[in-house]
Image 1 (cartoon, rainbow, N blue to C red):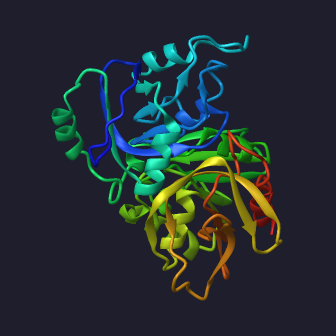
Image 2: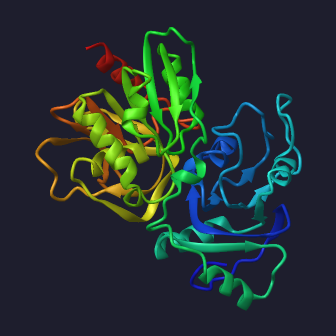
Length: 353
């Protein structure tokens, strides 16, 4: 059931239970396990527009965190069997083990068309409560995504290291919901990382003496995260190299006088076109965000470096007088195209100079 009372009926998948969250859709045709474990999806019920989910099973290493992060799943066909010998288990067993509540046999084309027209809204899935009045009562108590601070729900509880000690560079990662592949992409380029909880102060991270900072992706409303904005301001004041991804882009923008807004429908999928305004090239990108930076009243010291070609929203910025830049999309992909991996190389070049 959607927040406006629209009701869809299907077949229960995963755990028998009830779940709520903001409903969103992902247009990717592959990489469902990486999508389900992406911390940026925390608190959301996800519609997968691909017809078949689960047909290649799940693999223990194809995850972006240590657990399923979505609140619920809506799909058309959930495969009972998988055809990949490298898979560890079926998607149904994976859902049950991770206590995911979902629904299949839904006309996802109809549902996505409806949401595209009406905009993002909360939803509820239940395989134990069938009374629409009870469902609506529970749904009405579900908080809107606007104003929600969710990074604290997904960030690491304690700092940890990643990569090889003694590498060329030391990078402090502010974990707002970091994906594993961001860490892999940096480690592959000669970085030793220390991942810090979201509320860690700049002074505490500086004790490790890093060469630069990564501000990660994450869920929720960036406007509800003044603590992260304050930390980024301190990093900039210390003239430290900084690279932000997704939520990190929004936090960098807020730290430099820009504002954010809740999108009518977010960008979620593997084929979003972005133009690099500096090179003039187009990139096909992986995206997952429901908030974006406002382009009005752009401060003089902030330059827009990338735009989303579907709606001209800001897809990347740099701070003119600092070694700091960010993008709204996911250059680490996983899943998705690798067109934007050069951004990690750009960050490494910034560390050298």
